[in-house]
Every structure is written in C-alpha cells, then in structure tokens.
Image (cartoon, rainbow, N blue to C red; front, side, top):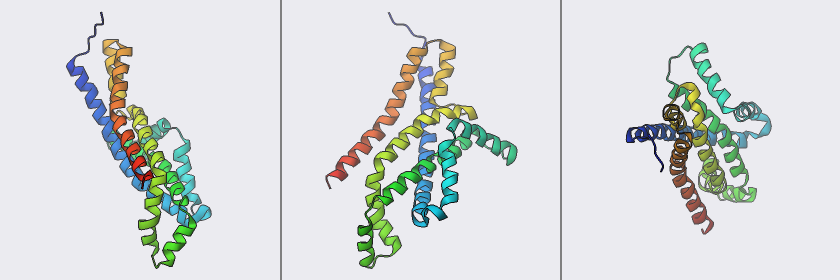
Length: 217
C-alpha cells in the first residue's frame, strides 16, 4: 500500500513555489516581449549592417547558457554596480533580456514574412510608416510569429527553474527542499511535473485556439 509523509502544508509550500514560477515567467515574458518587439523592428528597419551592434549583443544572450547569465548578472549587480536588490529582481531582469533576445528574432522573422508587395500597396494608398506597421505588418506578422512565441513563453517557464542560483525558491527548488526532507523523490517529482503541466497547458491551448481561429479567417 502506498504511503507518504506529504502533508497539506507541504502541498501549499509547492503551490507557493509554483506561484513564484508563474510570477517570474509572467514578468519576464511581458517585458521580454515588449523589448523583443522593439529590437525586432529596429533590426528590420536598420538592416543587417546598421543593426550589427544590437545583433551582437542579442547573440550573446542567445549563446551563453542561462545559468551562467544568472550568476554573472547577480555578481554584476552586487559587485560592480554595488546595488542591493533581491534575487527575484535579478532573475526577472536576466530572464527578460534572455527572452527579448529570442523574441527579437521571432518578431524579425514575422515582419520579413509579410510580402513586400503588400507593404508597397499600403504605402501607395497613402499610409504612413506607422500606419503600415500598425494596421498591415504587425497583424500579419503576429499570425506568423505566434506559434514560436508560445514555444518561447513555455520555454521561459521551464527555464525559470534555474533562478534558484540567485536564491529564488520557485517550484523546482521547493520540490528539492521537500525531497531532502521527506526522501520521496519520485512521488514529489511527479507532483512537481503535474504543477508544471497545469501552468503550461492553458497557455498552449490558448495558442492553439488562436491559430485555428486565424487560419479560418
């Protein structure tokens, strides 16, 4: 017969960790997406030569493992800038920049997927650059970029498990603490996986719903 030492209080502890995971992910994805849109538009408008410095910086965030970025970011804030901020803030800052680097490529790809003839037709009708981007380019680019953005958001949610290195107790760290105390790794990891599924499933289904709806328009 299966027996466990897990209590309701332990489940609440895991739920609190899940809440931290959701909060870190939400903040990072929102800020990272906004920055990614800005960087993506800049890269598209300036071209590969003029946007080379920005591209180089974004490539660094895409190439260096997130774990290293978190450690270096925490050290930079504390030792170089000598600013006392929480590990949660550091985690959100690093994850936001990490997300923006990938989102910029998603946005750039979406914008470049819009046919040039469509944009010329819009400009021939008297639309300004801003109107062209707002009413023509971005709506079409969003349809192309959405699946990749959903995948990015889900990836950031799972990558948030690494923020334990800056002393943030998220879902996986909470699970590890309970494993150390209760010595029930398989059962606790199963519960942890269930929490991650509950968090990610609505976002994945919502993205699928939007794809199906737009494909019928």
